[in-house]
Length: 418
Ligand SMILES: Nc1ncnc2c1ncn2[C@@H]1O[C@H](COP(=O)(O)OP(=O)(O)OP(=O)(O)O)[C@@H](O)[C@H]1O
Ligand SMILES: C[C@@](O)(CCOP(=O)(O)OP(=O)(O)O)CC(=O)O
Image (cartoon, rainbow, N blue to C red; front, side, top):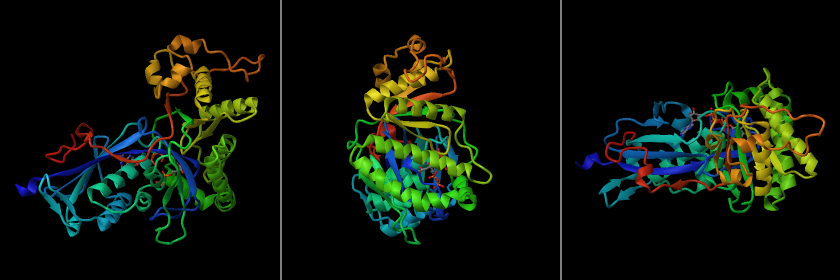
């Protein structure tokens, strides 16, 4: 009877978008980068991973289910995270359930992990970042690992580099570090999500199919073949990191925007400088860039920043709600949905921006006027159906424990997926 218990923890972790990009490793196994990077954590209300982890003497081996399907934990990245966590586990006691786990028992006990992403996996929406951050955060709680978030970030980093930045909310810097063992390659919070609460983020999901070149192999090929990457890592990024930290501290949107857009463009330029070249953006991505650039120039000062990760999806950061409203009107004007699409599934997340934009139904989209920056004599071309959907969100908080039993992904008695 005593051996039948299951102890479980459930947590939720956000994803993040880099505004100064990580691209290139100096150590493939430990996942040590060749430059610092800075990201904005996205509101977990709209994009997040939920993970339940459980331990029981009845479990015969470590197992994991991702979005309902069992996946193998034999990969080096999962193994590295599990090993690092087990090595730091402490005594655990649950008086209510009469459970006592001694520190040394963790080496023999097995865990079950069930995780769910509320957005497409491996589609360039940083599922690996939220996923590994959540795995490490929830297991650390289960195993009573008494280390701070920065130390945990160094473990999440070994699952996926960008995951280390998802251990914090708001604005986060991943310090590349100098040590060979990676102990100083950690994430730190620059400012929390309330610091610059005016920012509104709209993601244009251009394509949610799985991508051709993963970030991992893409950056390896860049480091091996690009001549530009060294200049970027050594000369350009260090200066941009200092400027970006200043811009965030001072709420200086024009600098923030110029740095974020330039850094995204340079990241895609080093991808193009890779042999064979890597194309992550497509025609729709390029059209979105042109639309933002034209508008920012017309206004004389940036209204919106754009940034693209290893895929065609655009992440657009608007200065404030008014800029977000004008942005959404432009996006819906150029990229209206297919006629059979439902507006409520075309713009998801924080739908209040849609209200601000005065768009309540498909007719309102058809009635949108061409933006004033479009020259009168050239009719604006529209690209119906080229965007799958838009997600409206904002900067958000870091990982949290969930105490709501209805959110648990594993059965409290069997430890198997619900
Ligand atoms: N919730 C999760 N828990 C644990 N691992 C996850 C989770 N979600 C994704 N992963 C891991 O991350 C991998 C996907 O990472 P990949 O880098 O290919 O895509 P992505 O993170 O969505 O895109 P990108 O990093 O370019 O933004 C999955 O195959 C899986 O191994
Ligand atoms: C373009 C990026 O999103 C690259 C992310 O790369 P990953 O963190 O997915 O790569 P691995 O460390 O190999 O798992 C830029 C960024 O997030 O900084």
